[in-house]
Length: 307
Ligand SMILES: Nc1ncnc2c1ncn2[C@@H]1O[C@H](COP(=O)(O)OP(=O)(O)OP(=O)(O)O)[C@@H](O)[C@H]1O
Image (cartoon, rainbow, N blue to C red; front, side, top):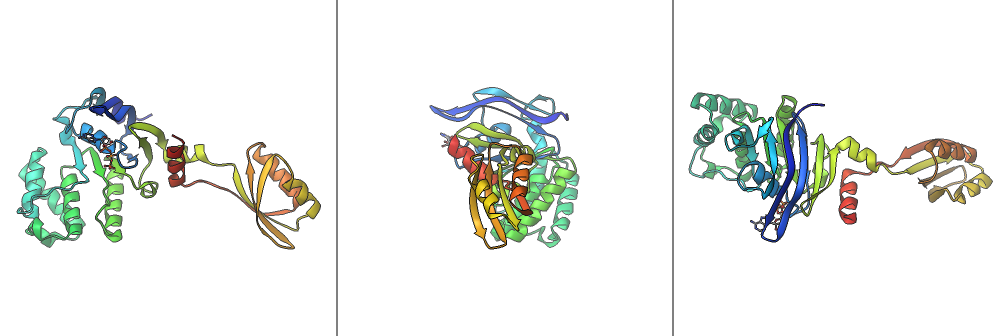
């Protein structure tokens, strides 16, 4: 197994009597896109601020690239906060140089990277534009460029798509994926659960400061795959159908019944899938047979409801 780039160990944060993070532990693999998912107030921002050393945890450890996190190591992080902050009176170039140098870049290197990104987004002629003259979407793009300018090992993006129209959101999503493919680790925080599946390799679901779900998208979906099947049979035998519908091992729900063909849902919590198929074949010819895979959104909502 690959070494984690960041290991969060039993991190605890409270504000007075309010617990924001309850001894949580997470390990994130290098080059992965990791989703931090949770409703408003779950604890995501607190975690991100602790990672960036903006606030302190009450207890716990953060190991980054094999050693305890320090303020010097934060220079290897790129952080896009939800509350975007650019200096309105600066030009894009001045802004990039300012932030780049704060992160330890030389002027030459910062300009080189700025050129690369302006070219990549096809906005080379924006260089001397003042931030105050930019539309919201343009400012978001500039903020993204400034976040990735110093080629951080770890990129932390808080609601990265808020404020973007769908075309620009797509563009940014593509860039995030390319960065990850080239070795950057990305932590992607969002309360919009439906936007996560296609972006992330793994995720955790935080609720009231506790981790309810953690792991790769496949492992989470596999765990929650339900024994619910949608089946279409044709040339079915009425008497065998009655027997099947009355079989206590299955719960059935007829969706459509015609003379030749029947479509129904079967919930099978008792028998092996092979046995279900065997029993269905006695009823008629199996035309289609599909297992229901719940969406991540369904899984998150159910998990939170049951918490
Ligand atoms: N400075 C603070 N003082 C007191 N309570 C706080 C403070 N910051 C956060 N909290 C509380 O801690 C809990 C976690 O908040 P946090 O901002 O980390 O959640 P979040 O998941 O980032 O939410 P959102 O999606 O709304 O940004 C919430 O109950 C919040 O009210």
